[in-house]
Image: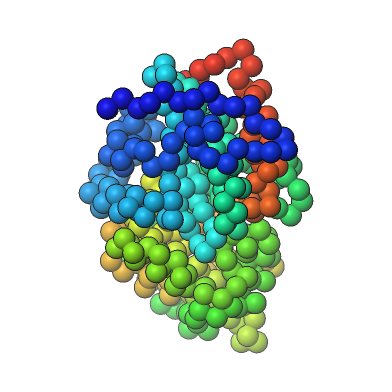
Length: 370
């Protein structure tokens, strides 16, 4: 069945913003996951090399997206735009923490107008509903558009409402991850944190990635294991939880922490839904930092028993070259962009202006992805 032609997107107001997908000529969760993935393939977002890496897990990934779709916008949404001339655009977002969402996979094929529409609609709907705490997007620094759109947000929203954190992302084989703590863990006290709020962890996270990260990841409150979020995912037979290990020195000072996020495989095609965030206290000497890192990563490997890719996906704002030398696979450098709900309006204005400049003298464009 041919999708209905979208209504023309209204020029956004700088004082009163539309708050419904249809205001932008967009729809939400209108395409099935199979239809979306077919479009990903036709646009080369899902290029052959990436599809080959995902092939062993493809049935599980498709099932996870289908299950999430049954929960509607409670867990996962896909905003889409069908251009009358045959182009299309889409963007997805899924619930990461209590009030935090990971927005990703901005893909457009033959329509710059469509890419603008799904981005603005996604922000306008979140503002209208007033339910979110924060959103985040992960992008490769080599993606020029993403570097401008998401990497440039800090200077275009109010101070303290957004953060851009460059970093590294590697896949550590589980046997290697387990072995890291064989000797080093004896020198450090490693503890798995419970659900209670942990001011020490929040302070460490703030020093490593800033206060916006702390709020976006829900580290400033209790339920650190995301049990409330997990209950929502269980409604459709999925899981979303977090386990956290911290390493302490003899005085009780927290040296490092590993935040092991577990979620439906393939929500993100780089498996960021299952990443392990590595936080290391600034100022440690090289040996002290190495021991603390090895200790928490070895402990965190237990959270990935049964994880289909057989690895520990580690994300850090520090270089992970040592792990790569030891046998980990570097995926790519990734930058984590985070913004609080208070920044939605300013970010909307920034994205609107950015696309306005790109649209001058041009209606359609080749494929763009983030």
